[in-house]
Image (cartoon, rainbow, N blue to C red; front, side, top):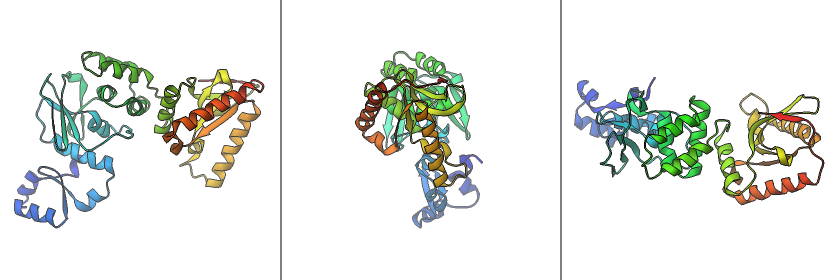
Amino acid sequence: MGDEHDIIRRAAALERGVSDREIQRLCGRGHWHRVHRGAYLPAESFAQLDEYGRHRRRAVAVAGGMRSDAALSHVSAAVLHGLALWNTPLDDVHLTRNRAGGAKRTPGRNLHASPFAPDEVTDVDGARVLTVARTVADLARTLPFEQAVVTGDHALRTCGISVADVTDALARNVRHPGHAKGVRAAQFMDGRSESVGESRSRVLFVRDGLPMPLTQATILDARGRWLARVDFLLADHGVIGEFDGRVKYRGDGVAPEETVWREKRREDRLRDAGWTVVRWVWDELATPAVVAERVREAIARAARGPRPTGTFRL
């Protein structure tokens, strides 16, 4: 069931005999929660939503009163498309009007002005929404690099779009002040990143001047037998990087102690084949210098030993 069915519209309530005074009373007593002018949710339903769910309802509610030349865009479009967002505020509902000027920001609503073509608009839950490729392009132009890459990686992995689709969307408005920034972010996006943490890790490699790794490589032993699929591979240095490797076994009904044992055996196989393994977890991404130094130490350690045996493939 789409989110528009959760929302109680004022017009529908009036048709059912609920007066404006009764609506005010229901809100005042905490039975209904106002998500937008003339749009409400049962308070219990609203309380159960996370920030994405709340933003989604607000966006759908706002869309009900949009002008015909407007569409939900930017982070609001990303939420409706189910794209991952990291460290990105969801305070405002974002819309874009199909015109060159007239952008306006009011409390809770950010109205952009930027031309878009008919093929850049789609329908989600009955609302006009800019397409995934256009949304990723808009975010690449406006968000910080790391946040834009996180969302773009997820879109490439889950929505069937390519880097070319994003750069094509960017090319439709080369005069946008964020165009060069958007192209740089788009060209770095990689649908092989399987989590927000992996996307942030790739950005860390760039920002700290580390060698750029291959992502999601399959490691084979000297006889061509499968050893593991790894998050990051510095093949020339004999180093494997793993972001919270235990996540590979979560959600498959495996007990925690079995997860630890599987991970140990997996890492032992890689070390036996001559690879140097370095790992980090989510909290450590907040101190990128620590992770970068750990990777550099692993590169130096690997250089003192023999080269790994076996091969890899992407």
